Image (tube, rainbow, N blue to C red; front, side, top):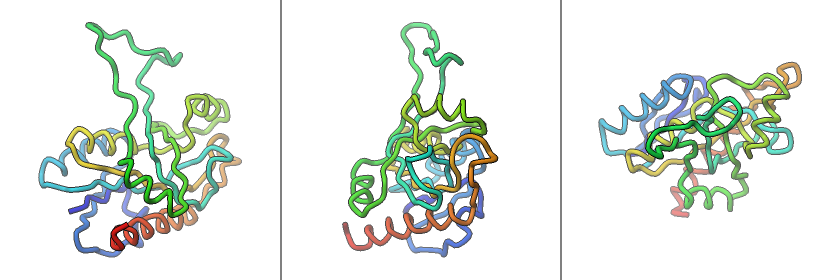
Length: 201
């Protein structure tokens, strides 16, 4: 059984029930998503988690309306300066999670871009913040990706993050926000994923 996760219902309003796939509307933000996905994975034996939703993209990384794979996802768990937290006894924070490499490669071979993402609890609205995140290697931004991938990783379940690009990072006046285009991109990449899976690719 596959667990298909989105933050809100409308992101997958076009979805039609498919055998072997169970939907979960987890809620907005990393905390809601981590709690919902962990609870679901503790309740039944899923074989795959798909985190599907909209994302903003760095200029040049993807176009509005694209469907993309987030191969690597990070979350800032550090000092405001970017320096690591000083934790006792050599403890470290977990700041990165990954989509299943085999699944990423299959979709990349089908022509979809595999990008690096960052999960935020506050959407980027300034060029300064966009530039700071870009320096860290991020190309797309969501509010749930790291949480879903990390919850699946801790449960030992393969996972992949798929996003439709709905806007550009930075100033909201220039972001080009387009929910319809974002969901169309998400639909294309999800349809491609399941077509490849059904073809045994």
